Image (tube, rainbow, N blue to C red):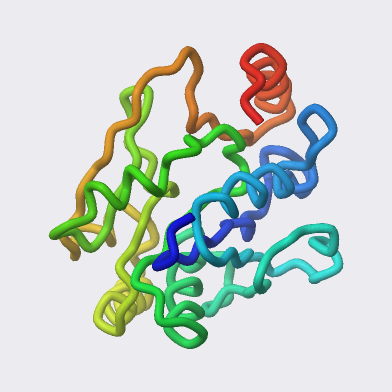
Length: 205
């Protein structure tokens, strides 16, 4: 566990391609949000969930707080990251915020550890796996300047994490091929079937 880090589960999406709230979809008996909460809580000191849904939706989970988007309008995961930075600054003295999307249940168990190893001289770190960068798996420096730049970018109409990260010292951390994509994300019912096959074949969780 890394004492200087807060983790945020990004669960504020609209789940349009799934047709209903995907955070409650199950793989081998556990919901996606349950899997992500358990997996991320082992890597950071505190866990918050970013969602605009009622707290009752997450009553069976072990987490520290539920936070709604600090800027309304369903503007995407970057708003969730800003929300997490604001929460971390207000409620803790932690130096970093690490992000975990609710639809990627197989992320590496050493994700945060590898981010920390590469963090010197960086303000933002992204994960790379299976030949692609995954900006929703990221770690952000927590301070007022980073918060201000992100908020200004969002107010100016920028939405994509990768675009906004260009304002910061950013590093990409590569993760190895392990027989399946550890950053596989579940967007559709078909993806859920693939995730079930990964889970039952590789016994990931």
